[in-house]
Image 1 (cartoon, rainbow, N blue to C red):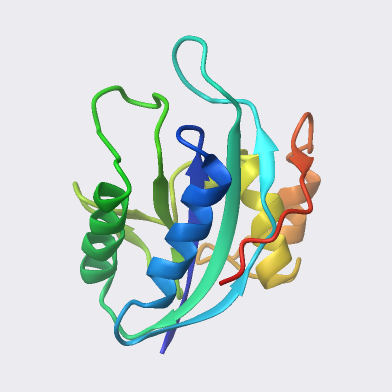
Image 2: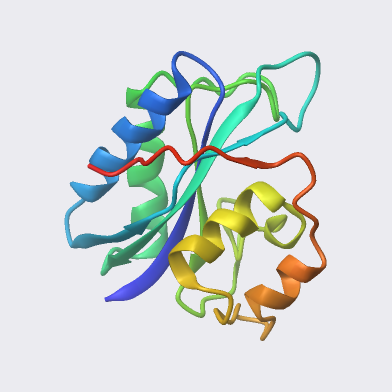
Length: 165
């Protein structure tokens, strides 16, 4: 089993329910075991125009799915929950990103792991710490706690809302 971390985000059509439905769908993936889910965090939208705030979370998944298989499964879940890819960084019902996949370094047209903006996004780093702890080492050797020290919480708000199954 490979430990992988998946970022979840939603700012349309009842974001809390979108995230909870996504957690249930990911927990049902074959060859996989849901190990931990962070609470939800509220953040301002990063993207064009006026958008509602996002709810974000991170989960830890143990899986034997290959990265491409996992990506395809996550995209299927996004589509099933109404995700449309029309505007880059636009509002969305659901966004699922593979943040880390074991110690893998992947840079292909379809998939980049670690997620390229991981180290700059407080709405990813803080919930990631919840499910991994500050001593998590990224493939390049960075310690999560050090990244958190360099990425202020800003307006990121912990909601205390649980996404468990």
